[in-house]
Length: 254
Ligand SMILES: Cc1cc2nc3c(=O)[nH]c(=O)nc-3n(C[C@H](O)[C@H](O)[C@H](O)COP(=O)(O)O)c2cc1C
Image (cartoon, rainbow, N blue to C red; front, side, top):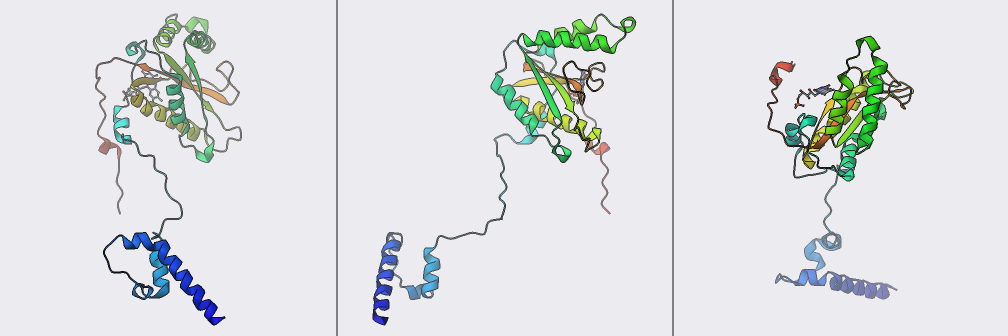
């Protein structure tokens, strides 16, 4: 029995050496036996691929050639008179909306909703804007130039996205947090435009950003927060002055 065991031990050793063979025999280093690895345990460790300690949860980081900072710096308001006729691919619009959808929201209410108007669909939007304006303003205070002004902008923009707040039906968070979350979503979309050589801007006329349920066809817990126009564009670089950021920040260090 003892001999049998010794015999198997020898076979196993040979097999291990055969298995590990090529990797160890490629160098001119003298052949090493198990003892020179500090005994069998050391030799086994030597054969086992080196394991490095990994954190339990690995962070998935999407690396792109363009870091966030240039995208933020390149974001700007591009107004409809600067849009070209070049159409915007539906896939690109989808990517922009996917970026919007990655916005944060308290209790994950995801309160952003969008309607996308392109092509002939834009005439419907102009009509809806007229209706909303007329519902919001009594006939005696209406400005006859307003509806045509918006119809012209809508016509100049290849894509118009209406932005809605979809209030959490349980009102689990204050309204301001949901408005802020929608703004985060719009900013995501806005900073993503430059990657596709697109420009756009958020327009929020008072009569459009009215009460819940005011926009035709929306739910009672939904209100419009404006219109986002976007398209390819040709525009001179306009100044985008900002006050000093340091004037808006207080540092409390002790
Ligand atoms: C919530 C929100 C609403 C806006 N509404 C309007 C608007 O109704 N009309 C307009 O001309 N610009 C509007 N803007 C765009 C701002 O005028 C513009 O961001 C600002 O002038 C700074 O210019 P920039 O975007 O090129 O940096 C809005 C921006 C935000 C964030």
